[in-house]
Image (cartoon, rainbow, N blue to C red; front, side, top):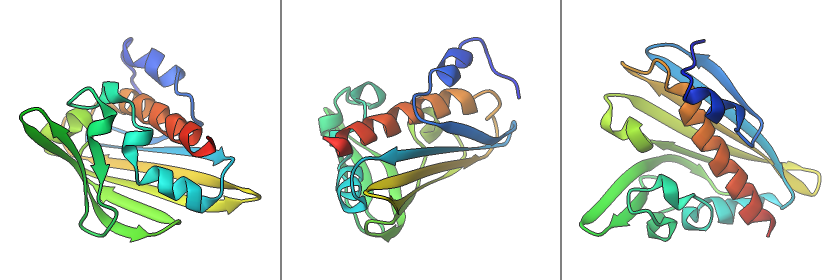
Length: 166
């Protein structure tokens, strides 16, 4: 796997246990696993409120408070901006307190001719929750982008964990 010098620090700094499952010029898949010291219902309520945990530095508006998630099949993970808005992802599968699956490109992937699927699964783990977040991307021009994307997502899942544990 090729990593650019800029991508290497992001990959190494990923705070959540992560794995780039596969990476090529036409696809990549990442997976993050975390144990969260909160029951699945609390983690779920945090997950479906991205304004509480997503880093505003990784938004178009610069403020995570502008994020919303309409938690239903077909619902939008959207963002308000000064001149309009952004649809980041759309929910294609929802099983409350268990699984959230969305399609749509995050960040620079939105402007690329790619297909993406983000699946977040919650499972009871003692008195807490095991969160597994899998992100699969397919399309042209993906060489070298897996590690930076994985690094950004790792930071988001760590922020979700901290928010759910409050």
